[in-house]
Amino acid sequence: MLSLVWKDIVAARWLLLLVIPLGIVQVAVMSFLPVIYIVAVLSFAALLALGSIAVEEAQRTELLWNSLPVSRGQLVAARYLTALIGMVTGLALGWVLAQAMARLASSGADGPSALIGLDAHALLFGLLACGVAVFLPLYFRFGAGRALLFCSAIAVATLLLVSLLAELILSAKGYPSPISDPEAWRAAAPALMRRLTEWLAPRFGRLLALFLGAAVIVMGVSLLISRRLYEARDL
Amino acid sequence: MSAEPTCVLELDGLCKRYPGFTLADVSFALPRGYIMGLIGPNGAGKTTTLKLILGLLRRDGGTIRAFGLDPARHGAAVRSRIGFVHDEPHFYRHLTVAANAALVARFYRTWEYETFQRLAVAFELPLDKRFGALSHGNRTKFALALALSHRAELVVLDEPTSGLDPVFRRDLLDTLTELLQDARTSILFSTHITSDLERIADYITLIQNGRIVFSAAKDEILERWALVKGGRDLLARLPRGYFRGIHRGAHGFEALTDDAAAVRRELGDSVVIEATTLDDLVLYTTESEADA
Image (cartoon, rainbow over all chains, first blue to last red; front, side):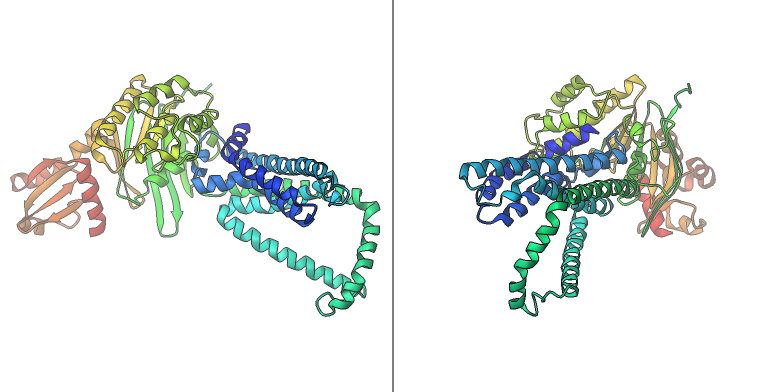
């Protein structure tokens, strides 16, 4: 199985050449636009996690690896391991670069210091793991192209659902709607954020641990589903 | 401990259904140390059969035994003893030939680096060149060098000679014949260039529209099957289905028979009976299907 992980790393190692300079640029501007750091580090980690799939799809090597003395189960397990290594590498790289840039720019205190902490990266890992857990079974069932399409649709639907749910909860709690009454929302938002932070701060560690645990379980279930789907697929 | 089976490959009643195409009741056996040619027109089911043997497709019926094992259940063990060349070899285009070979080599316990080096020299493969920069012929040569570098007991070749120049095709056939000297390696060779098989194959399996037309020793086939030439008036008197495929000309006909001895006995001097080629077999049996 390690040979499969190795071939993924060898195939996609040039992605690192793309990630590192872009990462430096992104981290350099993060004190001004913290949200960019989150998007950038998530994108880079996802690229490292799933880049080998893109390479494989583009170069049509799937048939080759399936013709070698490896089982479908090993191919699936190796893909999850590669994704895990890619995610951890991407996030670790982001964290190291963020630390370095924050120190160099002496802007750690003014900048998004909370974003460059290990907690924040653990949270990003959990989010990425959930994304990967959804994408990989679709990939093993339909191939990369259709999986990307379905995954994008699922992501958009989830965002819409979450925002709708949040608005319903806020409305039930008596908060003004940011859409129908933006003026009142702007006035109420700081108090809401303060309350939210106060509620979250003492529970953050426990909630994060729960979330990471759930993400690991989701990954495990996803692996089992992927294996069944791939074993049933004709190549 | 059970003895090694005498046949490296046995297919019995193999079925695979697709919308619009069915591979049905495919049965043949390949004894150890022999070459079998799998011939048939495009879309006949040759690649599907080979993919089923490699465990890349799930069968809908029948059995496959490769080295006595079922590829659907023991895929990795079966594939470790098979060298394969797909009709379009795909490797990492941005990596060199040597880097691709190193990646593949890691999967075989029986990998022989010296054999690969020897074949790379014999095939004039540029090891330091990117795979994407190779010609189609060189890509096939590379795939073939890999297939022959891990002491495979069964070599499965899917149209390996298409797109290759005649000189390399001759060299390839020589290499395959050399391989058989140890009487341990068997070769299943799918091709539409039947002249290659006439030279080296011991057994021929003709597949047509997903069904086996015949599977037998080449000499037996070329002895039994023959090309029959005669006048059109004679053809009119013969029952429908007497021949397996008919070409009608202005003055006469040419047809294929699967029982040359019977035709000689029944029609005597009223027809001319000539030896057939594998090309004729594919051509006439395809037309026979169309006639039917």
